[in-house]
Image (cartoon, rainbow, N blue to C red; front, side, top):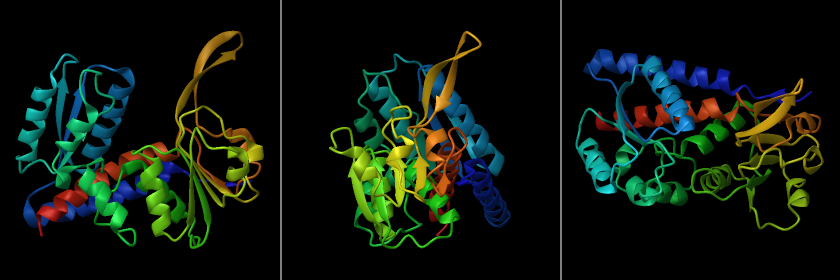
Length: 294
């Protein structure tokens, strides 16, 4: 049986460390990190994510400033709010929950966040710093999901140098930064995507396989090399029949029941990468706060 990488447990360990760190800083400076969370509209999934992030932040001692805006808000008003938060010394991290309404340009909005307060690590300046760094610099604002994946790999305490790593997905949020992080661990990295030819064959070459393509259970057991490490970033809702009733089930991009027969370690969905993403958001906010104390 493979090792199941328990993201909930590993994320809790990180949150426990952050809580102690924040408590110690509070004793010395009488200050705590502040995270501004902006949600536009009432997309159900966004509300669930915002609630989870807010709850986790408060648990470690981060002050949360919620801004829930109506879906009809215009882009200029949203950017004006972000500019106010950029200039607010009590705010160390700013999170804009995606997706935004189609009337708003996500790129323009995300780029308006001050790089030093970019809790998600999406700002071009932070992306550039990650790209040009020669090693994984823990002081950078690193995109949360890829960083969470790296921490899961580190939990295995194996030498990543020279490992063949395949990342399925080329998004700015996961695929590209994940490849950068693995490259800085001296892995040999291949980025695959929806237009890649012979995808199963490429996946079978992977010592480390990161699936972030957003297609339910597309990666089958036969795509996976014996003893490979599988990190499943996908989170997809599918309909299943249970005693004749239609129900929804959360699955990843990997067919877990098949993959676990081949892999040496694998993340479950849910309970794998998701909790790590939230923990790394708190880590980025705390890092930004500590930078103001220097």
